[in-house]
Amino acid sequence: MIRENIFEVRKRIISACLKAGRAPETLKLIAVSKNRSPEEIKEALLAGITAFGENRVQEALLKYNAKELALSAKPIEWHMVGHLQTNKVKDAVKIFDLIQSVDSLRLAQEINKEALKINKVQEILLEVKISPEATKFGLSPEETPAVIREASGFKNLKIKGLMAVAPILKSPEETRPYFRLLKDLRGRLDSKMILSMGMTDDFAVAIEEGSDMLRIGRAIFES
Ligand SMILES: *Cc1c(COP(=O)(O)O)cnc(C)c1O
Image (cartoon, rainbow, N blue to C red; front, side):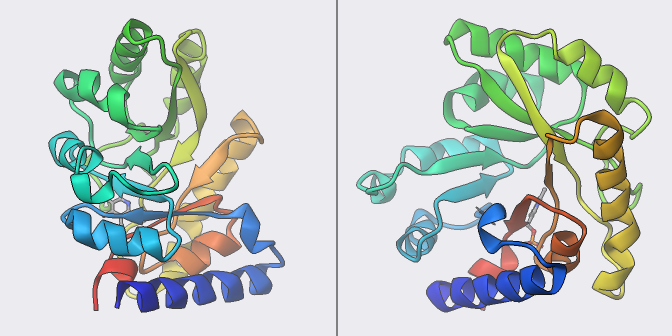
């Protein structure tokens, strides 16, 4: 069932790309595996998914070390997509390839400090709050430029782009202005930054609005 879901999601990604005149290879798909078992992750892995998103460090650690996933031919890429508390940063830098949910300068500082200790340059995205209804967390668009200026001096941190969650609305079309807001912000900051936007209910619109990275959970793991 997970395999069929992934096939279906890929088809929908390709048709959204065709509509938007984009090449599907330019989009990265992250399967959001929070609350899913190692067995479910393994099914997705066997269907060709290589990157997984988690929202809790403890849960991610269990999966990172799960014996069911240890024999995977390809190395699994782990992404943190949930709010990260500073006391969990030490473990987070050990396991995550990309921390997508950096929502304060203080957190960026802490990540830089712990990454230095293990001699790693931690890649991150800054989470921007594009809608007050969608999440409690995230930098305001107004404060984002200053945080980037400060954090770009951190030697063990690399800011790769911006992440955002759109509000849940009656139709996906209504999320378009929110995605556009993130894209416009990127345009004013650094056109090389990637945009992580688009989830189960709104990824087609996110693709049309220039998303580089989709974070999809339910469409992959639910029947
Ligand atoms: C849960 C979650 C997702 C995936 O959401 P779905 O609607 O299940 O696709 C994506 N991003 C974040 C930050 C999440 O917490």
